[in-house]
Amino acid sequence: MNVRKSLLISFGEKYAVLLISIVSTMILARLLSPAEIGIFSVSVAVVGIAQMIRDFGVTQYLIVEQDLTRDRIRAAFGVTIVISWSLAAALYFGRGSIADFYGEPKLHTALSVLCFNFLLIPFGNPVLSLLRREMAFGALFWINTLTAIVRESMAVGLAFAGFGFMSLVWGSFAAVATTALLATLYRPSQAWVMPGFREWRRVLKFGLPASATSFVSEVGTSTADLALGRIQGFAEVGLYSRAMGLVNLFHHNIMSAVRWVSLPAFAADQRDGNALQANYLKSISYVTVVAWPFYGFLCLMAYPIIRILFEDQWDASVPLVRILAVAGMIAATWNLASQILMVIGLVRKVFWAEVVIQSARVVLIIVAAFHSLELVACAQIVAYVIGFAMYQFYLGRHFSITLGDVFGAIGKSMVVALFAVIGPGIVVLIWGLAPDNLFLSVLVASGGAAAGWAAGLVIVDHPMRGDIHSLIMSRKNRN
Image (tube, rainbow, N blue to C red; front, side, top):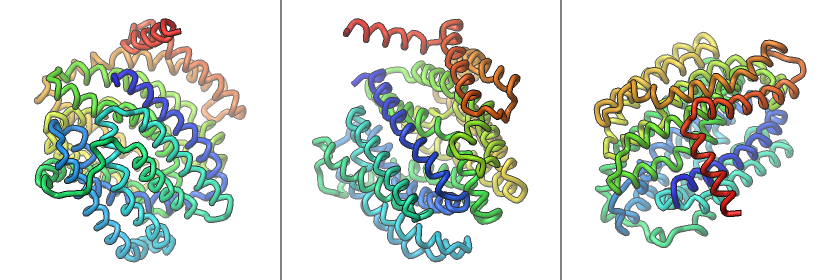
């Protein structure tokens, strides 16, 4: 499957999941309080850190390994099972201490269920990695879309039945179980193996730095929820989590679609001996031309979007959304940098970059958490600026990609983004940042943003315009 078709399927999957998630989130925001969302967010933050240890770099290893033999696949499965099941036991027996640390008994209940996810994950995630390696995105579309339907249906149904925060917990467990089942149905032929350990050293050689990198990154990502839960309270965690969740609609549903394809595509280029620099620069050009208009729109329309999706109990999230949208704009410029370094074997470089970035993030967030939610959000901006500087240093050293090359790749995206926010900007000038006519303001702003984006693509002749034109023409020729 070629990269363009893979991207289309991946985007289709993410948009389907996005639609399902938006509907579910709108319903759950009306059924659950900020404190209940906060309890679940802290539970997920704790489990997320354990997840990074559990993965142990196996996800990336199965994709980038140039000579993936049967014994190496068996070793990857074996390592995953040993680590996952060990973490399940550790989390189960440690759940009481975590609940006591936060002074919230409900965390004990949530973690009692979430730890069992680790027993099922080894039967799903390695298979998904092999499907990504083969760029079998048709199978991945159905696995991830059906999993989202099960997760959100379970969560909404149980929330209506009065299960509170546990509705989200059981939804998470149902999603992991569904992924494991569907991965078995779509399992590629080379994945029908028993776990083994003959090649465990090779897996560990890649997995140790990769796992350490993921762990450090997850600690930085989860620090806001963990620190706010301890310092300010679970309602504040819920407000911050809701703002971050809205901003992450792009990262989880658009950026992840790109990353889902880019890592195996970069790895395939490396195996075929193709130059990676040009593809990397083109990739960030495509990412920013979509990301920046999205974040700009979100920054201007934060109030009506929050009101429409979640109602007035979440109004305190509005300023957080605007600050975090700025952070997202910065992150979009280097989100793929770790992948291009990883495919040429520079896993340890990625690790040290993440150590610097996440250490700064943790310190900044903890200090900010003693003051305000807004300052915590501002800490994310500083962390992403540090991230850009760190990865640009490595890109220059190992790929001769200069700062001028990066700005040359994203320059046209910047102009397109400016065109895209003209419409929303006019709406703000006429109706203000907190308009009374919520639906009309968002509708008009959306139309203006879409028209401005399309006009910007044409005016600056952005590379994405050529691909869109080629796609349309190929469709016409088929018909």
